[in-house]
Image 1 (cartoon, rainbow, N blue to C red):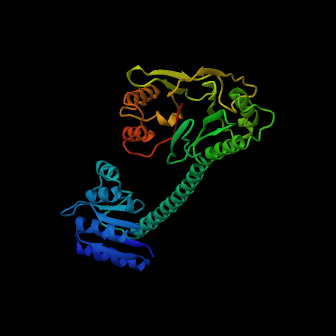
Image 2 (image 1 turned 135 degrees about the horizontal axis):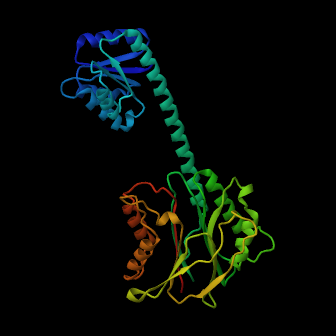
Image 3 (image 1 turned 90 degrees about the vertical axis):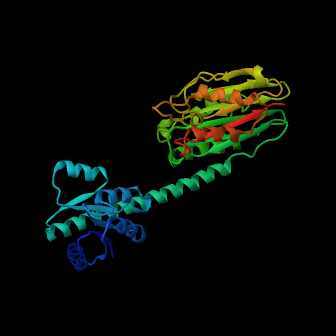
Length: 377
């Protein structure tokens, strides 16, 4: 049985509407002013509200605005009862969130028809909200699953730590790091285009494939060879049009050398030295995203890694943070932030995460936040 709330300071109108709607099988509650009506709405959470426009304490417009601002009443259908018939009045009511109007004097057949239509829309809104909640629950479970696959921090002889905060819609970020043997450390981070399970599942597939070393005839110590094999395996034509970017590096600790290759991914940032004398190297190689085109050539670059250098690998969700005025925070500001923290020596990645969260005004990230920090020596 649908609950309907009638808010009107005219007792005769209250009784007329209550009797007519009860005959239709609805559970009807009445209130005599806007303040009491809003409190009743919060308690009852009715499917539909019929509210007079002109009332003491709170007008119908004010009640409507309060109802529409209450998340618990988001699916309640709101009908304004009014003798005001101008276009300007209707625009004012619609701006306040009113869903429909009934003019005075009330024509009962019109009333019941509009109530039936409003309740259909209310039920549709509730069904959509239920489906949205189910989808969000599934995405949260998927995010937990992705998080469970990610590696634990490494402590020695190379220190690796990470931060992974999935977006509300779940993106396609994934990363891993592990010793290929006692001398070579592989580390990579990938970002599948898009959001939702269609992005998360390919990223998990890549992680499992690389972790199991299931691709035959490739040298996992050579980043360009790994990217070439991934590009041959994950052509977007056969992967629901999904492609991904990736940064892949291999660190040789006996020679203090880092060999790396990238495929359309943001550059990793290598910071040499500490304090005011820190230097920044952006590590990136040419190469199209994985799966976008066949027969792409990927190349390796290398660099010597000094003791106590720090390497940051990240996805674009770390720095593509919307700012007031429609601008994006940007990668240069992100690198400057890292440098600023380096002036004070070692710091945990949660300092960067908290800073970016404040930039994002505490809102859920629109894309996955994935950040790795590798400290050598």
